[in-house]
Amino acid sequence: MTTDPAAGLRDVATECAGLVASRFGRELDWSLDSLGVLDDVCAELLSEGPLEGPRFDLWWKLIGAYTGEVLVRAYGGEWTTHEETPGAYVVVVSGATAFPFGIAERVLSGEPFKSLASFGRVLPAIIERTGPRD
Image 1 (cartoon, rainbow, N blue to C red):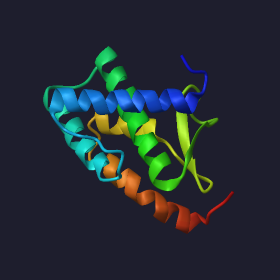
Image 2: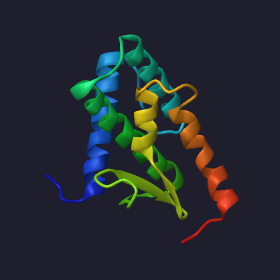
Image 3: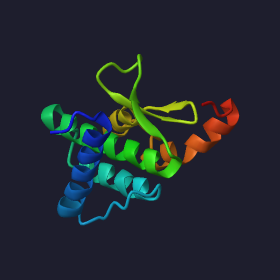
């Protein structure tokens, strides 16, 4: 077991890709477009009924880690902690903080108009609007 949180999160993200492939027959390729595929998987999960308890916790962890790792790879971000989310990790890109586990929770809760793909694509606009920081 690694003590590097980023490596652990990458491992969880890899588990997500494997489970999505085996259970849903869909490939997650670490691209921003793959977040749209994961949105479809979330919709299928929710079509089976609300996610609750351990089932919700498992998918929240898998989807949050995968979404965050896509941001890390696509935008050169890094995993870190944040005072607003004790116990959960965030991704920082050019000084902007993204909350992949927050969006995973909202999507898996069935909140209308929430999308992992939109979350991934909007980050450059947020950075541009607020100005990149080091």
